[in-house]
Amino acid sequence: MKNSNTIAFRLVVIIVIAFSFSCKKLGDSPQPVGSKNLAASDSTLYTPETIFTAEQHIFTDIHICYDDKVFLLENGKLKRLINNGLVDMALPGSVYTNFHPTFLAISKDFTFYLRAATGIKIIKGGQVIKEYKVGQPPLQDFTTETFGERNVAVDETDQSLIVGVPRLFNPGLVSTLKITKNGQASLLSQDDGETKGGFFTAFDVGGAPGQLWLTGLSSFNDNYYSQLYIYKLINPPFNYTLQHTYGIELTNHSPFPLEGQLDAVGFNVMAAIKISKDAKTIYLKTGEYDPILQTTDNIGGVLRIRDNMVTLIAENVENKRMAISKDGKTLYFAGKGLYKINF
Image 1 (cartoon, rainbow, N blue to C red):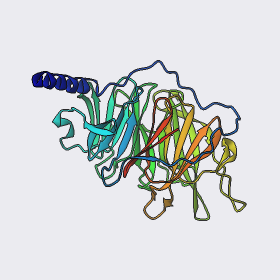
Image 2: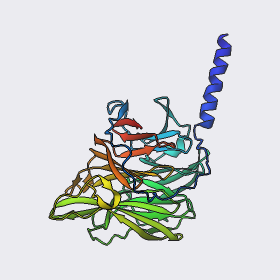
Image 3: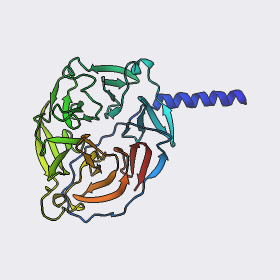
Image 4: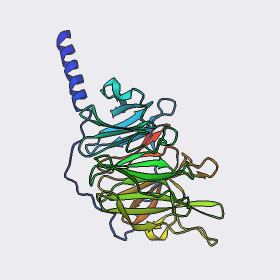
């Protein structure tokens, strides 16, 4: 009986390893946020549920596949969340040689993209299929000191990568670099040194294929706020055109409303943005801006945009990195610990 149990256990382990990288490919056709003008359906303030505390785990990124498998990066290693426990992913040891990834993206075709200060590794089937090294094309203009450790996203239009890179004039803020599947690269947001609408604190790719969402940093009388920009890929590989700008500007008049119709609200500085898999919901994480350190604070509120209505759904949430489940019913917050909201 003992031998039978041992054999059964080994089979289970083999099955878990074999399917641990699966991201079920679905025939979704994401669309931009709808144009309905409905009242916010849920004005509840949620309190995130604790999965891990900061004393237990520190994560640098989180991503959810289309089959709802949850992956995290902790201490430069890729892990999967299974039943509120962590499982190390079975990757060759060479993946981590002189490579300490801090950000993660996963495309619909089961490809994993790991980003470190030294470059980007592309993994499929548990093996590295391509590597972009800092100092070499297409990252020849960067060093390990200037490439930074910003997030990365996949544009499913052509499986290109959108990569956050530090600006030359303001290294604490983000430009966006697109790297095509064949290794071509070009800056999407220019590093021209302008402040208003010119700097981005966070970005994501979602909605219709070829749709890039950026959160811009603006200021008025030493007060900082954000606007939300939506770009669409018009002529691949690099021509994105601005489609919409949301978020009213700060003035000497009364403070702008923070909730309500999307075209009638203002936004505090945003530290993160996440598009749901069905493209019907946008999540924004705010964070106080520090002009000296040129960073956004971890602690802030969580906003939800649905049916063109902006609603505050949580306050004083610390972690910046977010991920939303396929069905849109669970929102995760990773960083100092791991938390979730079940809707």
